[in-house]
Image (tube, rainbow, N blue to C red; front, side):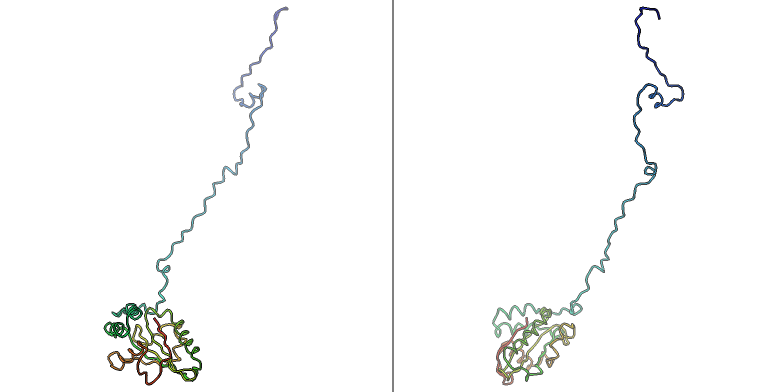
Length: 227
C-alpha cells in the first residue's frame, strides 16, 4: 500500500473448511449460534400412554328382566271378566243388572266362591272397632283386588255382633295361601267353598250382593265391599 491511498477496512471472508460445523463457522464470523432446546431422550423414546379401555357393561337380557311376583301368573285366565262385573256392580242396579251379569258370566272352572265367618264374635265389642277390623283386612289384601271380589257384613250391635261374607276369586283353592302377605287375617275366619250349581249358594251370594235377605235371622248393621 502506498502513502496517500485511502485505506479500507479489510473484510475477512471466512469459508468453513471441509468438515467444519455450521456452529463453528458462525463463531468465526462473530455470530452467536441459535440456542437449541434440549430434548429429553427418555421422553422421546417413551411410547404414548394408551387410553384406558372403556369397559362395556353388557347386561344379560334374562337377568335384566325382573321375575314375576304375580301369584296368578301361571293361572289360566278363564272367561270371567272380574273388572267388567265390578263396573256393573258399582254403576248399575244390583238386583236388576249386577246379579244377572254375575251368574251369566261366572266361570266355575277358573274361579271359586267362598263363605267366611269370623271365629271370635265374643271379641267384637264396639261397632266402629269391628268395622276397622274389616277395613284393616281389606287394606292388607289390596294387591288381591284385580283377581278377587268380596262382600263382608257386620251383623248385630255393640257387644252382640258377628262378621261374615262371600268372596269370589281366581283359582280353585284358598287364595291367601298364594302369598305370605295375604295371610295376616284369613286364619281368624272359617272358610267354606261353595258350589255355584247349588241353589242355596245362589241365594246366599245374592243376599250378600244386596245386603238384604234372611241371613239366618241376623240383622245387618253395615257392610264393606272389596273391589
